Length: 113
Image (cartoon, rainbow, N blue to C red; front, top):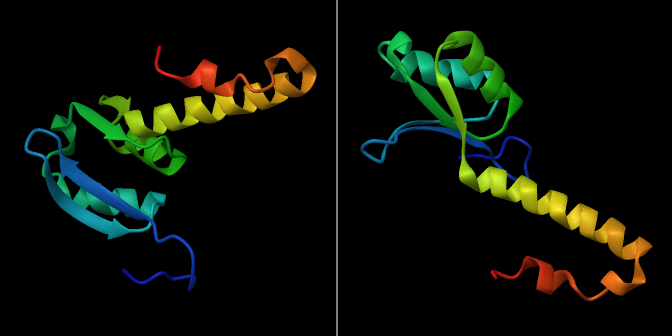
């Protein structure tokens, strides 16, 4: 897919079937118009959709809430963990500046056990 800005990241919206693991459609961009296009072109009976798994992106969230109001929304694990890790890093940096004894303890706090 061609990057419209000439450099950087090209964003796409992917509609897939979680039961079969198959990709149903891929559309360039991640805005409200794109989400509507995916839903209208790929889902025959929108009212029958029970759950939607998505990124935590407002364009997705708002469009799904408007177009399929009775569906359950599940946010994908990758982005949830990413946002939680970013929050932990932010608090850790702030606390380390304030409390000298916390310096060089980041690995201890983040390792598995």
